[in-house]
Image 1 (cartoon, one colour):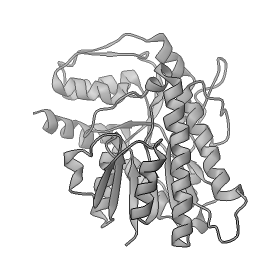
Image 2 (cartoon, rainbow, N blue to C red; image 1 turned 120 degrees about the horizontal axis):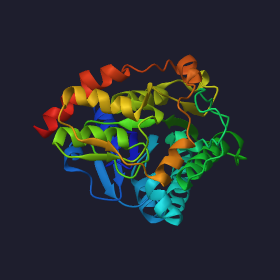
Image 3 (spheres, rainbow, N blue to C red; image 1 turned 45 degrees about the horizontal axis):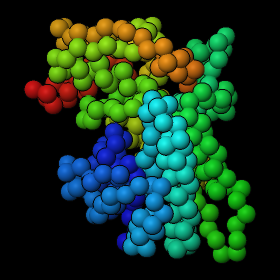
Length: 330
């Protein structure tokens, strides 16, 4: 039986993705730096504790399993990456290269392309002072990131294209099928964020639900694209399920709604009127956010594999996020 490998299984996306894949009958193998979360273990056929930088661990996984698809999400996020850029490069680049080697080996063993679904980010963009942030950006412009995380993600995108399209295939070798989503900020009701620069959105919500004060590290007027985790997981599985012949690209933007930090605060306060949310700007983190676009153009994803978000800003919070976090912390 072919299986699906999920790296970074304990992360925000991993939690939601594993549940989604299991609901569709997939046989899932999970990999994370830590023991798999107890809430996920029942959804997985097998789990491994290990580092994507560890070729020995990946070799063991490859010997015991055959993967039709690999969802690669293990990474060190933007703010964490700025604190330790060397570690970020080791995890995000060297680790991803190891996963690509695993995908290449799996393609050869199976005699057909193994899909490698990679989660990238709007951090690959790098706008400068004077650039127009309000225009939705396509996948191929302003690719001059100013964070190690963004640089790492952009490099892995290019590496995926290389091994999918341009690598000189030896006789009998099968290339990988690389597919990549560039996510905006993600908001989940199930898990707390850790180390991302768009984390102020979900952090506001979780703090308000717990009755804790929150100091937002960006300006109230800061606008960025976001989407809820439910839509993010739908996008991943929809892209993975699209026929290769329908895809003209390897890298796709996806987004849902573009809102300011102040608009998120105001909507949260309609359900949590006692919320103590204030703005105390971090110059370093604000500078990172200011290099990212206020919105992205996801028309190729819509045209080629039918992407469309289910949740608008107000529906996301009122019908999904706020009821779930209320239940979580009640």
